[in-house]
View (cartoon, rainbow, N blue to C red):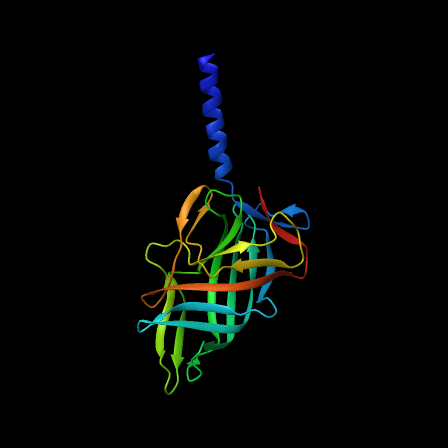
Length: 229
């Protein structure tokens, strides 16, 4: 009897580990994209009436860079977990409360992402990292009388596996327009295939956070979603 109990416990533990290692996957028109060879084109934009914000410090003073328009194009990639690649363009940008400052545009970010989970939860996330290396983009602020002049890279924080994690608003559901919520309070830890990963963002040497509300569509338009396998 004890041997049977031991076998049951070990089997249950192994099943739990295997389950924890399963990552979220993309589904399109009812079909799970299980192969890295399965891709679909996508486009993103900020939700109507919302802005994207990068918050940090310059010269010891708090600064918020606000961009009214966010637009991107790229692909989703099948497999476990699901991936994507995209180029994101930020325009109509300004430094909040500092009208004398000019933000050089467009701000271009080439990013890759992995589907992941909130730590200890089935809640799904999309975590973003630079496409290559550790630098997302370079921010340049100029202007006569501007108090936030700077040329600085936006990079992964030291030791971070990702820079930004955004919540999947409509999960386990196929829709024509998906939603991502990148919260003001940064998500600095997640789970990807059962492994905890840390995240963080820097503007120059200062900690930074990114917030936005994003609509995501496939091109041509199809129903899609993020599902736990």
